[in-house]
Length: 96
Image 1 (cartoon, one colour):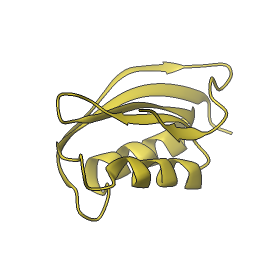
Image 2: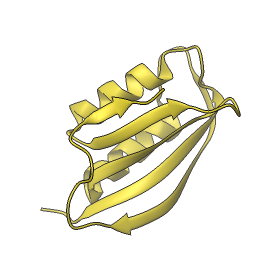
Image 3: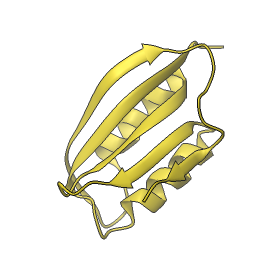
């Protein structure tokens, strides 16, 4: 099993009003990751992902390249990646 990591993310582009949060929550849950997603007042979507490093990498690729069907991703940034001993969340949720 791969080590557990936590990473913060922010996605730029046309990512609000296009069900980006819904699809992000769905993909995070499908991959059995935990964390959260929310809209920002900057017109971006941000959040945190936690889980096995290899699965988190899969989610990072999804955030950079896929998103929701109607979204347009210009850029995704990732910060504060660190190894963790236990998951801090019970599921993947949308914050408001």
